[in-house]
Image (cartoon, rainbow, N blue to C red):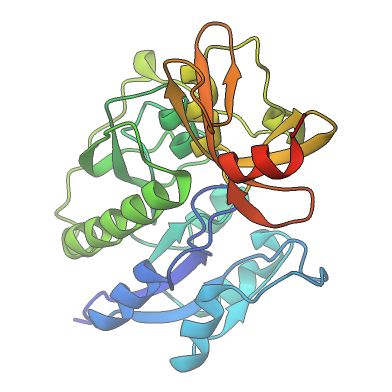
Length: 299
């Protein structure tokens, strides 16, 4: 009997908005553990932009002679996917709806890495939401894909403690690494048909939503604690933007302060004080808040 080890990989491993992974850890781990990856299905929005960069998974695919398919919708290539006769799919940040007809191509379904403790934080921004809510922990779930959003049975979860200083980039990279290992841990049982996933408790489901660019405008009527979380959660996109005097800056590092002290750049919030530790000036230069105050806000 043929050993089940052939896969189709869906996604680009970019688990949060603006996140650029350090390589393609899940895809690389699958290859290193001997799985036969027949193809990679991804999408590359904004590919015509001058600032667009190749996907990390494309570099791994090229090194291992794996075809990369970039359909607008996966149903467009259903015949090609069927021709691979793959045993299962693995999905990490695909960003497109997978129809049931595609899921049904795989005898063992499609496994999905989701960066939350499902059923908490279903949707597209669970990492950002965990930071915004000031949660003491988050985690990673490996679930079986179903047509409903993030509602599939859970094969494994790993809890991750948060200390309240994590940036989106740092936390995403950590959760991606953990998820990659979880996939490797559960795949043998899934492919052998001996895994026993747990159904999610629908009564405990919570949902996240996409951010708009306007979400990054810092509202000083908010508490300082909330704005500090936004700086960490909105890094890269949609970015935390603030008008200081006649200048709009992007705040990249901040902390809750007691009050303004000499030389520091501290903003009054409602309630509290927020010290701007680092920002991107109108010139595009990254500098400390103190240097910006000396250079741009002199009386």
